[in-house]
Image 1 (cartoon, rainbow, N blue to C red):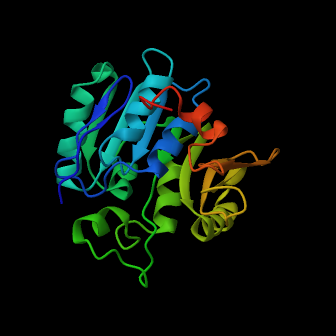
Image 2 (image 1 turned 90 degrees about the vertical axis):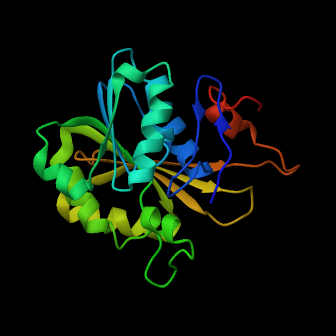
Length: 238
């Protein structure tokens, strides 16, 4: 399937050959993940490279961002997008499953982000390429958490976006491993609707927790003021 290029204020995303195109989930994660004090970042399942590029724009100058993906077409696309960006010298892409990467690298990260697979065996995507990027058969929740534990610095943060049920399940599975949800944003399409996504921050220290809500659209159908504030540094138009 062909996807049109997506242009942001400071970079563009070309999407040829990717398993999963630009979507609201990635934009939310890239705009929301906390980059305070962050000098090393890992993006698991980078796809087009969108989240990695958003974090490069938001991070301190010189922050090093590594992006990994197991889909060859996505890796090639991400490399192109990163090479054409203002932060090319601070970005690297590796074609490798995170399970293998966690065993082979000596790097440890201040921030790990992921827009991970979430189709269950009962809800497999009908698009084979997209399924590779979004199906839990290629990256189980347990494998993801174990890899993060290996790769995260002791004071690091793990930020991700998931559907509501999958997000709650991941948080429950993380506790026995020593990772705790410290920040949760319940994302709705608009006020009064059910929570569709969770933005989650997990850390090793469970001493604090906060929960917020975010509506993407207002009652008139345009982007809400909160969503415009969150993404205002990226979208060409509010």
